[in-house]
Length: 149
Length: 149
DNA sequence: CTTCATAGTGAGTGACGCTCACTATCGTAG
DNA sequence: CTACGATAGTGAGCGTCACTCACTATGAAG
Image: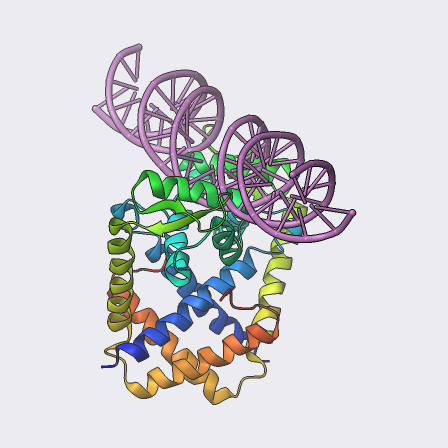
C-alpha cells in the first residue's frame, strides 16, 4: 500500500498550489490590479498587441468577459484600445507606458521570487525536484490536462 | 547566472498550480458544488460540526461570506444548521447524509488521483520530488507564507 | 447587393469576496 | 437582577469575474 505516500505527496503539491495562489493574488491590489486583469496583462505580454477575441481565445474565457477586463484596464490606464488594421470591428489592445512598466515589474518580481525559492537549494535537490515535476506534468498531460500555452 | 534555471523551475511549478486548480474546479459542477462550497465541506470535514464563526476563522473569510456559503449548501442539501449547545445565537453546521457521501467521494477521488499521478513513477524520482517540495515549502514558510492549517 | 459570419457590447444572472449596520443572545460587573 | 459590553449571525449593498442571449456594426463572399 503506497497510498499513504501518494496521499502525502499530493497533499504537499496541493498545499504548494494553495500557498502560491494566495501569494500571487496578494500584492496585486497594491499595484491597482486584480487577478484576472493581471492575467490579461500576462497574456497580452505573450501575444503582443491583440484583438479582444484573441485574448479571449488565449485565456479560454468568453469574449464578453474580455470586454469587461479591458474596460477596467483602460479605466486604470494599463492598456489602450487602438485601431485594428483593416478591420473596423476590432480593437488592437495595446500596453500603455504604465502598463508596460507594470508587466515588467511583475516579470522582475517573478525572477526575484525564483531566486528566493531556489538559490539556497543544493543543486542535486533542485535537479531531483525538476525531474519529479517534469514527470508529474507529463503524467497530467497524458491524463488530458493540457497546458494552456 | 542561474536565473534561467530558476525561472524554468518556477514556470513548471506555476504551470502545475494552474493545471491542478483548473482540474479541481472542474467536475464539481457535476456534483452540484461550487469551489468555495466545496472548500467549506473540506473544512467541515477537518473540524467536525462547527459554528459558522469557526468555519470563517478556519477558511480565513468573513463570517458574512460563510452565511452565504452555508445558505447554498443547505439549499442543495449538503449540510444542515443544527442547534448549538448552550448558545442560541450560533448554529452547528453539520453534514447531511448527502453531504457525507459527497465529501467521502471527494476523498476517494483524491486518493485515486494520487495513485494516477505517482503509481508509475520510479520511487527514486518520487523521493527526489518529495525532498524538493519539502525544501520549497520550508522556504515558503520561512518567507512568511504559512500553511492555513 | 444580399447574405452569412465575425468583433464587440448591452442586459441580465450567479458565485464569491468585502463592509456596515442591525438583532438576538451571552456573560459579567455592579 | 439588571444594565452593559461582547459575540453570532444576517440584511443590504458593493465590486470582480465568469456566463449566456440578443443586438449592432462591419467584413467577406457569392
